[in-house]
Image (cartoon, rainbow, N blue to C red; front, side, top):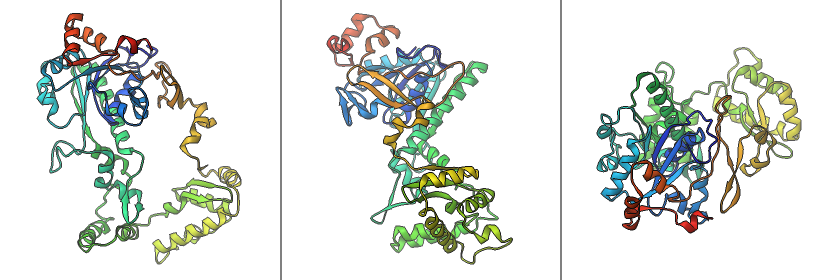
Length: 434
């Protein structure tokens, strides 16, 4: 049980060992910890990289705080056989083991899936790679801002800076991957409850990026003949050094215009700010133009279609922009919501801490940190009626090394020897008293 969780979560009694870095595996494990699982985070002696980046307290970086709450920390020098043996003992007592080491590294430690599956038949073994373990890019390191451009996601987002593609500054692929991994683990636990057997749960950042693009990645051969032609054009355009903006513009022109949803699902400037609307269906679009007092012959004249859809929709967006600019955000929100059109004002992330809607739904939680005091972070994102989630605090490096090793069968003299040899690290008595 996590030392800071309430004890009533859906994963209470579950033992999880996490050997994770960066975002995907740590956040997946944090979701399990929020659910009451006892998550033992295995870190190098110097600590997880996120402890060292943008430090805000001794041994803790800002990014460490929001992906590692409610866990226990054990510090091991995994390059040493004795540390590998200790990790093996921890895994032996676990229900779930999460890894995102470089390809082949777990096998070097004797902790690959094939090495453990028969020894621990109830173990759920979860890992995530950059591009999957098959194909020409198998084993290639994959980070969020590499996978976004490689997967087409950067192009789908349409960002350009100084003529070059721009990925989202948010690590969307990492978090999608974490959610897929946590869902996979939950599914495997459900299956184990009926079969008694664990299994391998595996995903990749590439898979997560494709899931995020699901709306674009449905190829209907009879309707999407434009796609092969565009792909052939892309190859020639790249060989000719065509600007990236030209490639993006060609994609927008060639893709079917559909219902012009990109005109009615976007942000517009108002007299005093910005407003976001989402009217992706024809009925909602008709409600929108009625509320705005605007016109769109495509919606009001049966059978009417523009000769050049791409040009028409750009012009229609400009007309709607002029209309929106004539009123305030509050005025348009009132009119559009009265018409049943989904819409919202535009805010910044820094405003979310005090946003009444966010607070009313408990989406921001406050952790009491021993050094920093109150720290506000995004709270558990799912509500349960009978087994609520709880947000604990992040562990200090090596805070639970001794307790975790005792739980794995080591006595205190053996733990002292590991610490003295620099194989394991633990929080000093002085640090523990803080």
